[in-house]
Figure 1 (cartoon, rainbow, N blue to C red):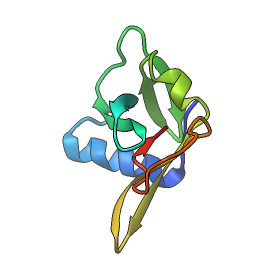
Figure 2: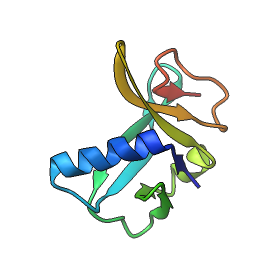
Figure 3: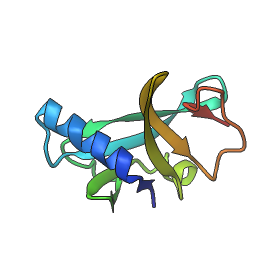
Figure 4: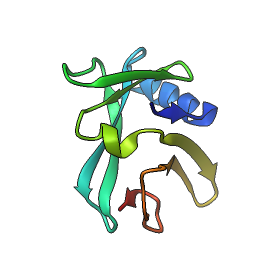
Length: 106
């Protein structure tokens, strides 16, 4: 299961409205790369793929592919908006390490 904080859910819902994809899902996946070994990829998808796990958190559907599921299980996705910038932040209990930007992990 992946949890979205209320701030992250608000950011996703706002992105859906701006993209004209109200009711879509928030896709989270892991790809090899980044400075720590794996990097997070996020986006909007209108429908889950056949083999996706589908969760609902804070009123948002979350889609996760089977390869990413074990690396993301139990993760919390937050959202920060500050003078330094805004974006998603990831609290992943499966990450042994992460880069300073917080967008990749090992």
